[in-house]
Amino acid sequence: MDTVDTDRFPEFAPFAAAVQRRAPENGTWCEAWTVRDVVIHQTGNAEELARVLEGHLTGDPVETRRFEEREQPYRAMTNADLWAAFCDRMLHLGRVVAAADELPADTDVAWTGRTMKVPWFAEHMREELALHSWDVTGDDAPAQDRLAQPWMTEHSVHAVGVPLLRRGAEILALKDGDHIESRIRVAGDDDVMVTADAQRTTIALAAPEGPATIETDAATRVLLLWGRRPADPGRIRSAAGPRELGRLRTLLSGY
Image 1 (cartoon, rainbow, N blue to C red):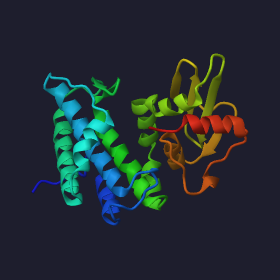
Image 2: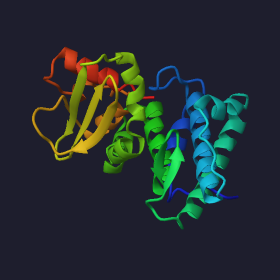
Image 3: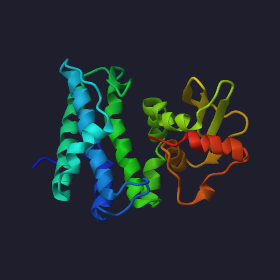
């Protein structure tokens, strides 16, 4: 029997272990989601990443489906069938990603209203596995180590970027003349700089300059970018004041 390519997706095994140690109806750090909801989401992610990348490979491109559409079939499955479906979709994604290795790494593929480079498809699934493992386990040391890997921050900024800020920008409903410019700093790394006004949002890596809005560790910074909060709020340090800090935290509301 084929198994998931854990060389290509090293975060699969810890995700599987985290899920299988808990009951499907257990809650998670992702608000309003149970462990079962997380597995449904991951199954839809694996299927859709493979579907879109495979469409590009075969010369028959497809539009990225919304979460609701791609996840709906899995909500009717039993827990056992759902887990089997997740493993099957991960197997297929591994095959598609392997086939895409023949393409130049800088090839752009349409994905959710933007484009992603070919290697980012596997990276995106890896990031989803690492992030949602944390949703299930919380702040245990292995989960923090996975989130702290530099590529996690780079993928969040370059491959996901602006969509991560969309929900927060809508909540803030900035008016003409309003402007947010904030820096999230990790010692020894580039800052993650986010900006927002009434027309647009941006996110980029930038050399540290001036005061930071937030200083934290690498794992917490990834959590913040995805609208999460560490169990220990002391891992977030700021002298920016409640208005600036509050606006940044709202902007970082995640999907």
